[in-house]
Length: 286
Length: 246
Image 1 (cartoon, rainbow over the protein chains, first blue to last red):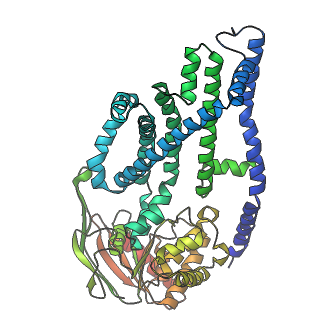
Image 2: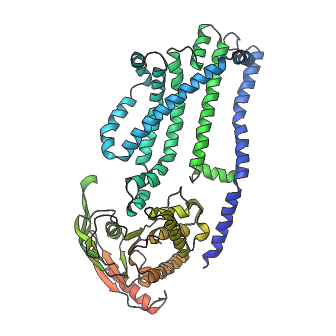
Image 3: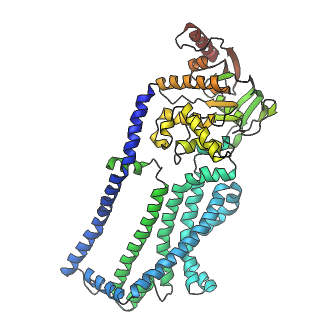
């Protein structure tokens, strides 16, 4: 066979690809440092503007003032409680919203009949501004945890639902036909073709849903809470301490970024088969 | 296995504008272990005919029978190789081939996969992902996925048309060899007339819209056939003339 030569060439390429992960990981680490450059530069500029007196300290306190307040809250143990309760609310709302969205999105994405019955209603509900649910939820669930988690779940629901449904609808017909000519039943079709093919789109939905979860937890905590990062911001406003507000803002950014990074890490593992633009750039980097 | 196509018609309805007939009154008889090629002008419905035989589409008229039994959907006796490899990008070569064997016990799956990959010369790539394969290798995996079921009828829809000339010849030889050894019945759609002549017992020429069978040419040349031989050239010219008849 004359293709033998090209096959051996490809084998070598395969061996190289297998050896690559170590250096790829190293270069991902350096990419992470690159991501820190802009926040550090902003912090430096903030520090300089505060020191020079350009930023009035009673309105826009200096970074060290923010750090001092955060440190005080850390030392007396309050901050850990605020972060924990907010994270817990986001987590519960995210799980609840994701479960509902996955069940409904899978049903409407898979079955045309179910889609025709349900999707118009769900799309109409999506058009309701999510904060408009607040008064109803407070009436139904009270002002405590349940209403907050319900609101967060609503925020998470729509992007997950939409991405799962459209992802299922968008699975390549040609791949589905491979299942059909091999006599796949519904279970095999979902398990071996539809679910894996939809995963990239589903992950996009999860990331968008998680971001909205962090957004809605603020709204939930602003509407009445005795603990949490949102409460901390209200507290800072009431007591005239902008440093606390800015500190809570930064904590939100950090928490959102960390939770998103966790999700991305899971996604990278599950979706490493993708032959996309990002994979091309990974290959060029090493 | 004997494949019978009777008075087959396929009409696409007015969902998008005007309805049209893709096939009308197509009759075809393919004997057990016969290798038949379908050639035809583009748009004559030869791919549609293959999709109906595979069970992916329903005919509007007429019927398909396998060994006298009517076919109404995909069956385990019939395997199909498409024009593109259609491998699942998230599965390695082994697991792509495994998709054809899901109902078998695991150890039987594995031994059949090993045998199929040996047959197409890809054992070294068993754990490679599709993106790591060349076009020719990917199409051989698709061929392995079809053969691993030990089908009685193999349908191929222009399987080599996207490959370069050298690789195409190699895979043609390979397919011919597999067919001689495994004794399945082949219905092979192609637009490459020479390819049809070299491989087939019989070439069916389809024409027109709606498509119908224009002519059947029995290729009674001894095998193996040489591309440049006078016999192959004469048959090729005859078929090309049939394709261009006005």
